[in-house]
Image 1 (cartoon, helix red, strand yellow):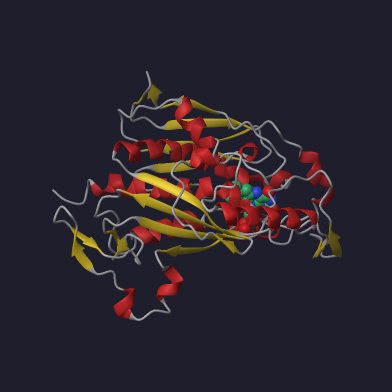
Image 2 (cartoon, rainbow, N blue to C red):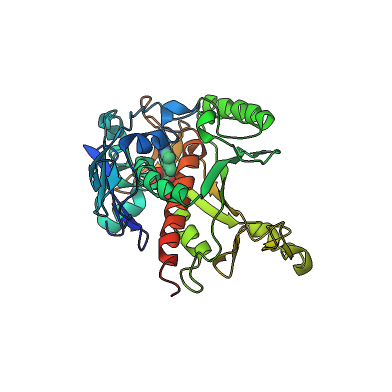
Length: 361
Ligand SMILES: Cc1cc2nc3c(=O)[nH]c(=O)nc-3n(C[C@H](O)[C@H](O)[C@H](O)COP(=O)(O)O)c2cc1C
């Protein structure tokens, strides 16, 4: 399986399977001199952990990250940073009864067609488990961003068709642990009811996640094939179960007139150029314009549902897929994917920030 990396200068390669011994990431291109310890990374891991949120998979992995290289006496050295996370809560036998059945909405048919083999145990490399490596690596990116005063904030904008009214992002994502990561308490109640109902029906729900970036310097992103929006789209669409991305007002811009869609220039209190609105979501001509970055990601409902689903076997016989009682899945991937969306944005912005150093004398 080629293509396990993202980023040009700040480059993250991930490895490992859902039910293998361990998973991990290697980061190349992190500058030397950044203060970094395992706690910095493990704090971020909480934001993706099933144990941190309601309505998540019963598979409870401790997700403790060890730094194997690239850090000496609490500082990055400029050498590759290697991170390892051991898998512990693995029950591969749950997948044996469905090994020969094509799973609707999941990866096994396409992997089987492409490679003539598939690690069926928990979905192997196609599992959402791989995204733990992304969050671990992005913890390093986030430390670099914080060094430059850049802050990211992400939340569930919509879940099961229920949309947040109050769209101020969460000030402190950590404080949402134990709740749904959603800033609108009324919407959150309705979301929980809908999740409860879906779970009782053996079904699953989708979600829309919003990520915002503050204090992103003007000038990040390349003007043609590596536009900031293009890099974000690539990174975000690489998240398993992601089916759509919107930057700024995205699809609704297509329904507006130009005079209303344009963000008008004005001067801020310091006499600097700014915009009176932010429909472009902080990116113009592929380059950050100093306004907050706003991206939204559509996450499909979990394909693994307890409800029986018609399917066929690998040797082409009609059958019904009934997941084993003890198989474990997220009823809504969108809850834990909030941390993954923020991770991918962090990696892209960090990469663009480092690339920006090459753009002028
Ligand atoms: C954090 C996270 C957790 C996931 N958990 C599950 C899960 O429990 N069950 C499942 O069927 N898919 C889960 N997925 C999604 C599958 O990995 C994904 O749907 C599958 O690989 C097919 O790829 P596609 O949906 O991108 O086409 C998860 C994804 C993420 C990001």
